[in-house]
Image (cartoon, rainbow, N blue to C red; front, side):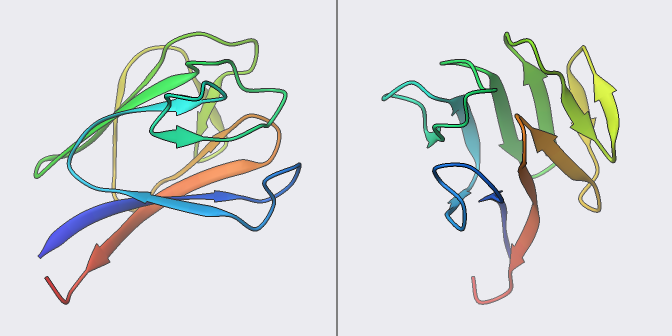
Length: 103
């Protein structure tokens, strides 16, 4: 079974869009080279990093005026995120764990 995390853009210029990422280290932000890119003005070019492994996901805010929120609580350091958690970034962007049972 492969684990993935899906980013959902709920508002702003990318509203309705989704990006799914699997194992590895991924940068989230407005930069062209970000693995997960969103034009949310509340995101920095390299806003956060998510490291996905078989053990789970480690979320680390790299920069930004708006903190990453896990289950509505701000996070200022690196945090291992439970698969049931909802992670929010920027104004109205979120991501969550999904399981691909077909793999």
